[in-house]
Image (cartoon, rainbow, N blue to C red; front, top):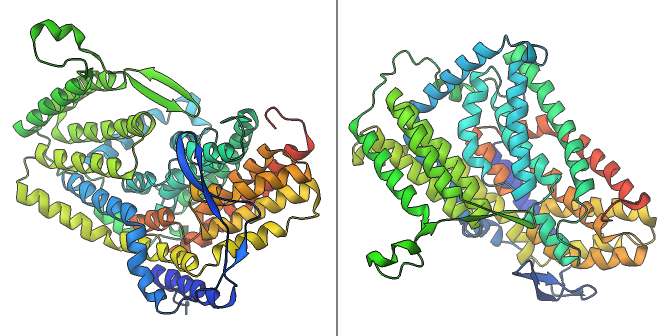
Length: 547
């Protein structure tokens, strides 16, 4: 008889209780803090050498209030998940995703006989392309929370291709995590860590590129081996029974789908196009609507930030032009293809918004919410039906949202117990007298341990780099090597730590229990941890550009 595995909520709550118990035994301590401007943003950082003991604050009943407080702390991600769930449920009711998957699978059947793809396999090429895209997003602008929205699209696609939900999560979330760990230009981790270390922003990029390729090679290989095993025998999947949910919800049998284009879809197309055209021009110099000032209107140019560089391009005018063409062609086929076009441009605007306008989860959630509304209107749904479908989607995904709040309570318990700084001080003290290689590897271990407690990369950089950077000067290793230790330590364990609200949210949306996820990914995490340790050695033994 198989032993029943505890529910994800039970596992996370057990960890929360352990954290509460730890506050009774770990002495209280604090660092003094100050503010520092990093890349134009004020950051709260600790002052090296300022650690002192304070009265501990053992947590008792606070363990139970941590659920409420965790909800407050993680409110953004929770609402983000709920809005994404509601928006995609509206889209799902239209059968547009089913039509899209069916059309995509038909396309892959046509090209699988191409000689160039026959050896590697068309499905492997598709998986590699998807993983490379998300890894690049993780490496360039630190894609993390945004992956939650793509899980709803990619998981059913993966299952329709003969894989499982783990594969679907892997090619999105894990791929983005690999890129995040091998960060090339990530402003939220590398940018902050280098700024706090007084290094030129995004210096040492050459070796980071090499590291990114190595990390991706290891991760992609692991995922492809597993995916091909499941393709040959789906019953070997760890989530074979669980994936019945996705098989029932997303059927690729679209024979019963009625292809039509209602008048409402044309109206949505026209209004959306007009709005995009208006946003494509800069009216800021037009102080009044006098006809003589019409020459002051100019094309809207977006400053797209990639790392420390900026590129000016007419992103919105280009998007408007593409939407005008693709929207028209899709409407001539059916409303389902038009809704898929709306999804495509939602993704495009997400990229433009994040890289050009500093969007975060509020703006992204709003973007997907609008996509859901436009999808419902395009299908000629009544206002009542749109609301009903949205609420059904929120209900369906509530479990994934709630567990994020519970996981957030773990960190709050340790903070309120005044033990996080004590743990940090003890770990940093352990590096003394270990030599160059030993010290950089110990930094790496410390960053991994702290990442379990504090999954936020920017917060961890503010906590650790003011200590690690001066210490690296004392022992004779470059501050760049210290940043690399932070980078790897911040990245790999994000894909397994239960305190990560993003991981818990992703697994909740995909319906994958946390224990099953750990059973699948622990070997990859172990391999990546070893690779990270090996990649750090050249940073202290070799002369590398920027180190």
